[in-house]
Image (tube, rainbow, N blue to C red; front, side, top):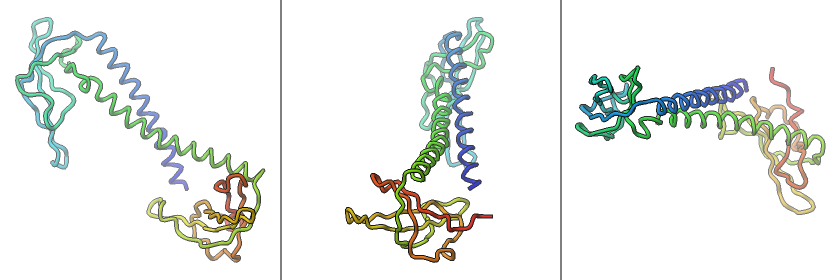
Length: 233
């Protein structure tokens, strides 16, 4: 459970930090565009970039241009691709700042905004994963609170206490109690599943019945009463 809490907070904080970094990068890029000078450049070489595994090769253009003082400047793009986005001899528009022309950029959407888009996408995914965990927890707490106050108590038949193989933490699968109940007013059978249990509960189950609190209007909302189980030390 501590691992789950750590993951939830870690993803949320990391996603929030990435989104804050994205906001800062957006402002920096917008300021760069607003204050930069435009020049005509030429791709003079394609620089090969190889991943650490040496399985992926990409190419980034080396561009030269003449700044407003007549100085010949060369710079390499921060973005690379395969196949190459540019060819040797191709003319490109360049944006640069007068005080730092070596930090020029090709005037292209991804060349300018690529970093902002990538970090923004990563931050959004991480924040949604972590944030959705908080939302789910809050909804579960609200449902439990409502059922404890207004739920209908029934006795369901225990079917099994088995491992939840759809979920694992550090290679461990929790257990859950599966039970069912036939609604006498509708003759429909409802199957209920308990919350995850991080130890084998089978030795503590002494009856074939278990108490369940349900919402009569929506039996899918339920709490399987596990108060008979000992607490984890």
